[in-house]
Image (cartoon, rainbow, N blue to C red; front, top):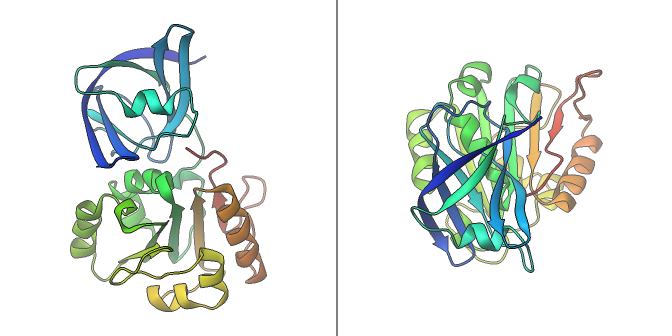
Length: 247
């Protein structure tokens, strides 16, 4: 049974008016990169909660959550409004199977996200695990506008450190941006623009993780299955590992 830990907000970093990184002081919190917790706030109607992936590396003293307020949401707008010193609740233990432990061996690891779905990948890439397990890593982040391309300095540090191993591919559908592709992800896979930009293939030596908009996950998975890849299950290892919730 989950327990609740009271914690303080360290800072609320606004990427823009509808996207922020909420950073919470909670040293010693244990989790596996890719897992999520529930964040809760106290209201007149009781404690309200919502699931969010951890963006920070395991072992960090501050927990990092990337969030956007959902229209008419009961929790996310309240979290979005929190400032340094405000209190909230964090569920313990962290949970979820969207972790590299669940991903079979392969040559190329594709990390494909839309929106805030990039969060768990940043946590994974901040560990040594993917760099030791895969010869090639491709991080794909699909967004509508350039302002939604978050954590670019962090990503740039990996580009510099792992120049021969790592490729970051932004996809911006509503604006042009240097180095970015400008189309929906399923289309980019179908016409091979994504593979060409990343200099990598979707083949039976690939492992693909999908996190973000459920419609994107469904459509991208369909394109990957056309290419011969299949869903990864514990009982039947495959190539496509999917995060089942969206925050």
